Amino acid sequence: MYTLSVSSLNEQIKTVLESSFNQVFVEGELSRITFHNSGHIYFSLKDSNSTISAVMFRGNANKLKFRLEEGMKVLINAALTLYKPRGSYQLNCFSIEPSGQGALALAFEQLKEKLLNQGYFAPEIKKELPQFPKKIALITSATGAALQDMLRVAEKRFRAVSFAVYDVLVQGESAATQIANAVSVADTKEYDILVVSRGGGSIEDLWAFNEEVVADAIFQAKTPLISAVGHEIDWLMSDFVADVRAATPSAAMEICLPDTNELYQTLDSLQTQYSQSMNQIFNTKNQELLHLKNLFSQHSVEKKLELKKEEIKQLQVRFLSMIEFKMQNFTKELSHMQTLLETNHPKHKSKKGFAQLSKDAKVIALDALAIGDVFQAQSDTLSVEAKVIQIRQNKEMTR
Figure 1 (tube, rainbow, N blue to C red):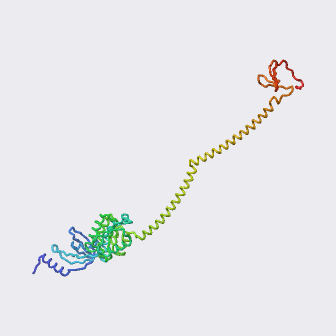
Figure 2: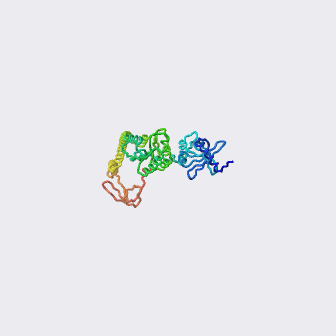
Figure 3: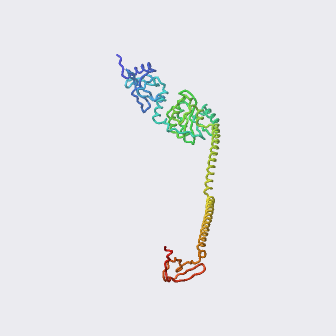
């Protein structure tokens, strides 16, 4: 009877397994995923009835474009191996693809969701582009068609701007790192705008602009940044994170540079508007000035003096009129009094047998005298002093 040691048996089984199953494609659901510090990934692959252990060593794990997640259905390219110390077999995975979906597409969606949750796409943090940039950094391949397209458009639109070209790889394994480093360095300079760009290509060609390291560099940049990668239908992670997305490199120049011809038209229009506005302002101010001049003229010292002179003249005329009126009245009154005086003058009242009686320099009536009174009787030519001796009533006068 031939007997085998456990190690010998495991070795023979290992040889048979690994020679018979050196490459298999297995589809199943990921479970119990462990990302080891060494960089290896350990997990189980299962379906509704069975489970098998699997490992993906660091070299192959670093090539994964997406992150393995619990419950994800995948297609694995692997070899079946036996781990001799425990006598257990497992799948040694060379590559993993998501079932029914490309690895790059899944990686894109995973990173997009991650960055969205971290606020990388928030509209409120987007920076505005300056209206008239003076210095622009172009982060692209110095030998690519995208650079020539951008410079050609810039030459036509706006020549009063200078460009600095940061030559980087725009595809391949080291492209993402170069692009991210160029963005970080350019951001420390005094540029008005940064433009990250390349021409069109496949999703694999453009993948560097979907890497997280590039997204981080764009998000951290303080300078306004335009992402202009591929064609209009291409949307890259750099487009979502950038302050402005341009459909093409040429479109980036149309976005960030003013059109000289449009500026000339705008200046002409502004000049016309300025002239019209100034004329309107001058006319308005002239009317205001005339109004103020009239107000000043009406309220000036000279005008007030003229008004006072006029008032004085009117008062003078009125005063003279009043004086004349008073004089006329006084003249009439004087004439009237003179007439009365003349009428009542004794010389005009003197009649034969009549005289004026007065006592103590006062004219009195005859019946005011008493016996013994001394009085004067006078006419216009003669004055007689007498004394009352006797008073008799005139009977004829009392009847």
